[in-house]
Amino acid sequence: MAADTHSAAAPPPGLVVSRLAKVIGLLVFTELVYGIMRGFYSPIITDVADHLGISDGEFNWFETTQHGTAALMVLAFSRLGDIRGHKRVLIWTTSLTAVGSWILVFAPSFTTFLVGYALQGACAVWLPIEIAIIYRRTAGSEHQHRLSRHAAGFLVGAFYISIIAGSVSSGALAGAMPLPVLLSIPAVLTTACIIVVRFGIESDEPTAPAARPDWVGLGLLAASLASFLAGMVFLHLQGATSPLAWLLVIACLLIQIPFVRYEARQREPVIDVRLLKIRAQWPVQLAALLFGIAVLGAEIPLVTFARTDPDVAGYGLGAGAQFVSVAIGTHVIFIAIGAVVFPFVAGLIGARRAVVSAAFVGATGFGLWLPFHDSPGQALVNLVFTGLGSGAVMAAFPALAAAAAPPDRTGFATGMTNAAKTIGGTIATSVFAIVLSATGSLEGLKEGYAPLSGYLTVWTTCGVAALLAGLTLLLLPRSAGDEPATTDSAVSRSGAR
Image (cartoon, rainbow, N blue to C red):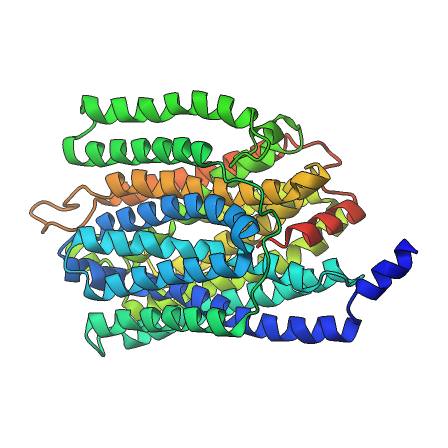
């Protein structure tokens, strides 16, 4: 009788696929916009810096703030989707992103641009919420996991393709129109996302209306991140001898004590610290943080180095926005190749060996920057290595984390890898902003250029972080992620990028 009831309640397979196709089409648009945003700003970083009257190195503060805000928003809004409804939260986050994008168009100063760039971090919430929407739309189908996994593939594919489109378009248009007009393109697109979500996607009911967000845990985490970032700002302003700067960094570490104790007592914590006791779990989370330092921390220095004129600074590639677009496109293509090839390599040599090897490939790519950084060709070769390694590692993390988690905590585990990666990027970009804030690589050089030693420090740090990530992953149990059924089901449940 129960089986009959279930069968009656389940919608016909054709209806499920039809509904899903419409939703995917609309959500693909939001991922296309997200990807365009990710690729759009990098080629014009130097133009924005000139417009705001800041040095190239100071652009790192924008990335730092956005990564920190994104990490907190992902943790908060992902859970709010279950409590308030996923469509509603997607509207909130697209609206925040649009507001941030329009602020960038009219920002007259460093501070206002910083606020706008931080609000844009809300777009990091889109994919987890979109996966939840798709998962709900396939409810009742016996192929729910498979349909959700394929739908996630469409979304991720759209994201990567549009990164290239965003970087190429901004690189081609740079200099051809006033900067505010150029910056209005992402603003218009994110505004269109609000309309698409509001009128194109059906409303849904909350899946956990009785649950409550862990505001205390989120507040402690926010306080810890804010304390660290404030410490980095004072190090930048007052130097390494600033007592206040180091007190703020120490405060960041001390806040972790009540945070961990509080989270360990919660049924629905913002970060499930109990998962870190699992032997196959904590190496993945630590490696995600380390690789976040390497991958996210290297983005802005790559662009500013490429656009530095060697005739003026004594180093750099002297490239324009067009070459930066090509470089970003090359990197993204090989990230995608690494992500696609990883499952096949894992099937041949095992997931543990494959992910460790990928981390070492990425570390090699960052290390190549130290001796080889004098020509665009050398830069592209370096990006091939970092792209292949990064793509494979980032593709492996969600499945490894989900496979090592209890069945009711796979979402937590995959979400934690994303949060750990983003927090790693926050740490890296704030530190690198200080490293690259020194002026003058040659005697009498005009303000605005970091010394070459700053870039060498960045590449060394990224290479060491990627190497440490690989060594950390060696601590995984030898059978970690090597059971095909477990890994496949974990990927199905996670739907993570």
